[in-house]
Length: 373
Ligand code: CO8
Image 1 (tube, helix red, strand yellow):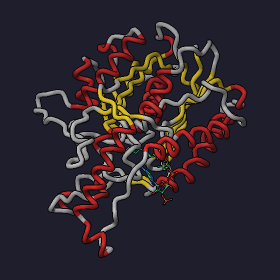
Image 2 (cartoon, helix red, strand yellow):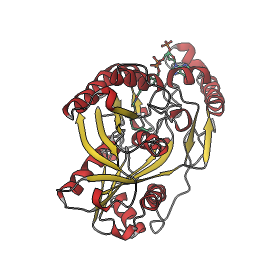
Image 3 (tube, protein in one colour):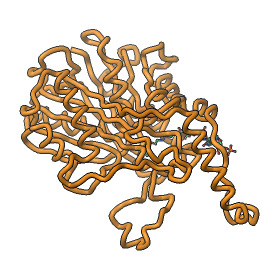
Image 4 (spheres, helix red, strand yellow):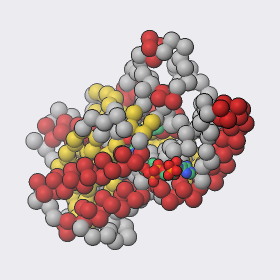
């Protein structure tokens, strides 16, 4: 058995930013247009009026101030309201592979590891741009890695579930160096015409290199233990899938073919689930709140993170103890907690312990206890 360690992380941030002000202006133009076009049905009560969005609501309800997107074209056009991505030929690198490879190369560089020594790539994300071949296998080839690669999807918890899978394989000796990569193209499965969720998501890719601790070339984080759990819920759901042609032959533009959620219910149900999950995981590892130097939480909602931080630590977290990045990146699904870890972990000292935790659709929750070495 070997001790697995995180020896490097990488972050690909897209070039384009959409601020709340830009987003709300575009949404409200769309709402005005929709309401004008459906004036008679709205008056007859057969179509619901599209209400206006507000930047103040977005900041107050979520803490999100802006988001990065892989392409901006189309999203802010009231006649389009979704990203427009130039098509790519089969010989071209796919979008998720392009984002993922960038993050992987940074992780490898930070760890001082050559891509050819990597023998496992897991592409863990909340959606994949095609069914097969796996994006992970394309990333493996682009990097020049060896061994094997596969895709997995546990929605917002994909990164921590991927880290557990990779850490277990490194621990057992079946692989030596694993990359867990999370290219999240959330803008492409978000319904930008729905006021309740149009502000929530952004695009990004993160990568985490996991290898035997004895092979680490410098400062690293020992993976003390991991814990993943799921419990079924329809409160976050996207029905788009390979049965679409058979079930909906006219390929309708249906609301349930994009991200849908009952945000209030998610908020209420996931908070106790996550707080208990982290508390149980820590207690089974003999850790008290006072032993924790940092919490890198899933980045969905600031109020949610404030609540979990307070519950886990038994007090209001000090500035920096539970860093948020969602004000700049919005919810980037599985990548959120890894962005926080990537940006806010270098200052920890030897022996300092922290928890990376993600949660979301499924429901799913994954926690990774790490110790600086
Ligand atoms: N502007 C103005 N008013 C608004 C807006 C808006 N944009 N949106 C809603 N309102 C209104 C509502 O209509 C409501 O009005 P009323 O009181 O008259 O009914 C009022 O404001 C309050 O609305 P809510 O109750 O919905 O507001 P909340 O305070 O609950 O905040 C949140 C909404 C921010 C969505 C909040 O509930 C939340 O963050 N919940 C948790 C969500 C969460 O963590 N989800 C995890 C999903 S991520 C995941 O698992 C990955 C999925 C895969 C990725 C998908 C990528 C696309």
